[in-house]
Amino acid sequence: MPSARAGEPAPAPVAPAVPREEHPLGSYVLRVNGSDRPVTGAWIGESLLYVLRERLGLAGAKDGCSQGECGACNVLVDGRLVASCLVPAATTAGSEVRTVEGLGENGEPSDVQRALTKCGAVQCGFCVPGMAMTVHDLLQRNPAPGELETRQALCGNLCRCSGYRGVLEAVREVVAERGSAAARQSGAQDESAEAEPRIPHQAGPGAGGIHPSAHEGYADPSAQEPYGEDGQAPGGYGEDAQAPYADGTEDPYGDGTQVPYGGAPQDPYGDVSAHLDAYGDPVHRTYDGGPSGRGAYGEENGGGTA
Image (tube, rainbow, N blue to C red):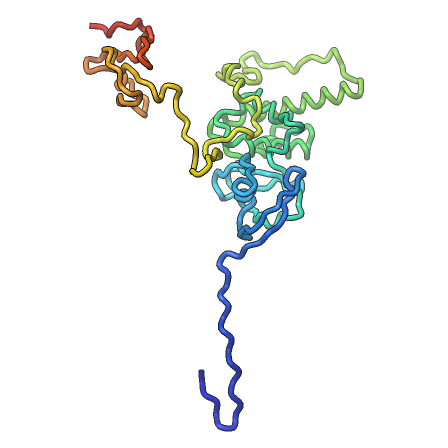
């Protein structure tokens, strides 16, 4: 500190600099799916996606890219479709946030969710919550969108499993269902109306190689069941799931020698040679010490061909 000159008053002492908070915290209340959800002690820069999943336990919206490119985290904020990974949660305090968990009513999936399932749009399921929010938003803006408008609305939702044919079919399904319901309510339903003609080689809703039984486990694509990283176990990072015979034994070579399951070499790439012995014969496998009755390729147990 420079010394004061003769006859000049001494400079006032400078207060030490206050250390700046690196991650300022804040508390606010979010209104999510019609309920007030308090958020306390949260970094003000946390995204809406992070707060929904990690602080409020609503894991329907998925973290697919964290860059607003994939649409897996889509939610509605004051009726507007947004990528929740790009929106600071603190800025939505006082707004109405709606997630895929809030689409249905009374614990039942919405007509959009049911149609996505019926029309075969659900495979791995990761993109479906965001897809459902996009379709819901589209139908709120236009009750009867054309195919081009539907495709334009879906251009921000990436899917690498089922593709978009099932989603387009689901939109048509919902439009037709709502139209029929409105006609029945007004008493003006035309009983003589014929179904839309379909080109013979076109598959119907839910087709495309999808067996009807495939839908039995996906009757409600509302993200109520945990998906992959969504599952959490107390005191850990996740919960392991094992096959029903993971703790049993197997007879990997068909000679009666039982070893703990998993001891035999497995081929992660589906190479058929991993299921053949040194002579090229099929390897017979049984589990828990009981004979399976058939070999790996369906032939009767009893050894490979000579």
